[in-house]
Image (tube, rainbow over all chains, first blue to last red; front, top):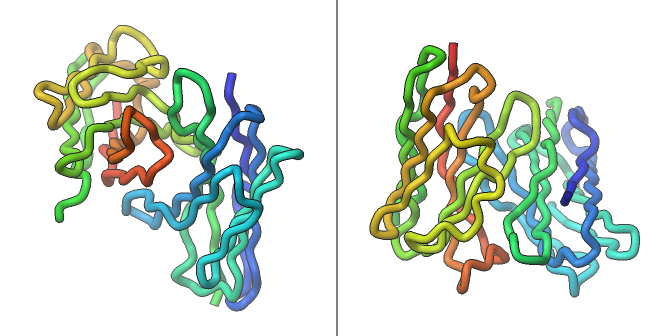
Length: 113
Length: 117
């Protein structure tokens, strides 16, 4: 079935450094890839998304890259701040009749002051 | 504008009991989804409503789970009888995408943490 793998499961960085989280997906026809951030005790919130017709998208300190050939996409956070600490989930929308989001297992990012 | 709301926020029940979770989506969102996260694992799809109709319920684990969305507004997810492995956080999400599409932003509720003891 459809599968999204996410790495690493935990990531600690010093404040000001960059953080990169990577995901791979199984269905080459997938066409939508959102990233969600879930702070402790709060709901998952969309922070950035990318569609399959685009290779990269940036929003201030956050960027997402997509390699359709290799079937992987990555989240890049630059100049990390303590408030970036959260669990980050990648997801992929698989084509076909189902068309629901399949999520990765999450990455606990800790930004150390 | 109110976001997606879920009730209760926490529920602790004994094995064999029944629990009903409720989700109120954002007003006007036809798409409503239920997801579940078991400790430390991925957020797994359970089912998808378009208005009052079940578009896809392929993620429902077994017939102990029953979801309804009467009138196409709020939704309930009932677990009867609950088992230990049902413990986890149940998320509801809604989106505005046309024709059941989910490639528009899905807004999540805060989740219901269910613990079965």
